[in-house]
Image (cartoon, helix red, strand yellow):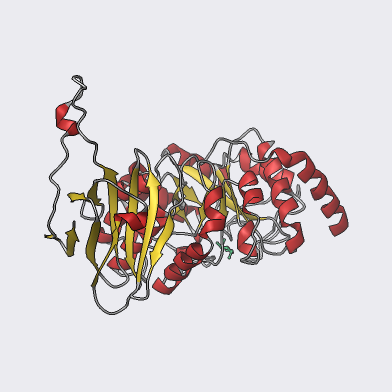
Length: 436
Ligand code: GLA
């Protein structure tokens, strides 16, 4: 059985060498994904509101609309593991758990689409999903056709219960079958999450997947968030060249709204996921969000950094032993987004950068994206007080000189804001900035 499958996959991978061509995910996908918060809760008697059931996905879709998430860009509800019966049906098709999805997947998809929201689903390239439910390895054609029939918009394909050498052919084959349904569906591959850290084949992965889950699963803690940030910094030179419109590095879900992150840590996750152009999938109970958590997730200026049409994954450009990390993402109109992040766990300290360290020059207008305030023009350096495990997130845009000879120029737009020549301070909420 395995030998036949390997031969079939090899043949398919030859046919599928054109790779992915679905025109989707031109900016990082945004939405909601079940796994981190709701895992594989199947006991609906003990956990009626939290179990993996049509009720959970319907109430989430309702909230995406009523609480402004959809308007802000979170446009999909994505089902993860544990949604199906433990056995396929008599025709070989996957069947949604009959108790937890009494109306079936097509009805759920119609409900979600009726709200103007997309729906994603989960399967596994191997014989079983990570939770032990039926996998797709011997049923790729059948499963992709079924998902298309259910009007699915995104398929997350996990990598449990398969052998490592089969990933390249297996993921390419699954994508080939996706391409051959008439339906464009975002292809989320967990392929690199199952490979050794060094020398992952990012080019091949980006040629065949829209987004790729990389490295460890996120948990509900600062340690987990920080370890993911550090992993991506370590391997950024290998990953960044393959990120762009159509291809994004999925560093796992946003856990803002749960139990493990403080306000500063939540801002840091939002800032860093945006700087890294990562998919923004919220995994939290939208019925139980605090206002401050919602405010962070709905910050339109930070979302705009994540969704910038250039689709560049930002990089860590500076790190020191005082706990500072500086990250920079080039964004449209020659602007840059900069996150100054503290990994300290004791006190707020002043952290900053020289423009030359960021390879920027001239005068740069600075806006603080959490405070939503323009804070001045810098020509040399910038410093801010950064809270422990917190972040200051900025947008820098070059100040354009006035064009004296252009009589059509709108003068008001060409007068640069005042330059602070001496070190100045400005208190804005909890931030203290110094710049020159
Ligand atoms: C793996 C994945 C997770 C989730 C679970 C489901 O651990 O990495 O994101 O999909 O499987 O079982």
